[in-house]
Amino acid sequence: MNLYTFILDYAGGTYVSQVSAQDSIQAVDRWIKQLDLSKDESIGELDRDRLRKEFSQEKIGLVDGLKSVWCITVEIKDQVGIVHIVLTAVV
Image 1: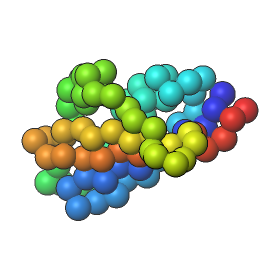
Image 2: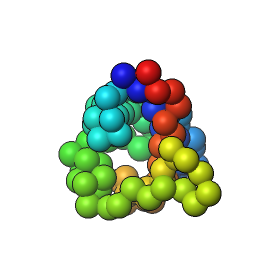
Image 3: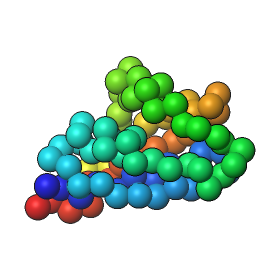
Image 4: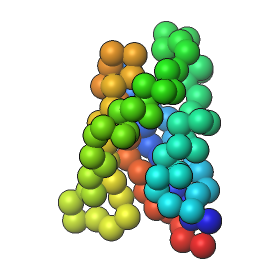
């Protein structure tokens, strides 16, 4: 299993978490399942299905000049969020 770090910049906050997965597709799914934005009461309940749809429709781009670092822009609760995905450890 590989270790992936997710960094979400959204609604004035930065949310960082890690998941273990075989590949980046599985990592995204696990991250969405465990993503918790409830610390910010103004965000409310997260629409996980909509977030999955965002990931399936948008291209996750490799960050220029870097290896194993990707970025995607998503919409959460009608606000833009930027997600960076870093392959942190290969096991």
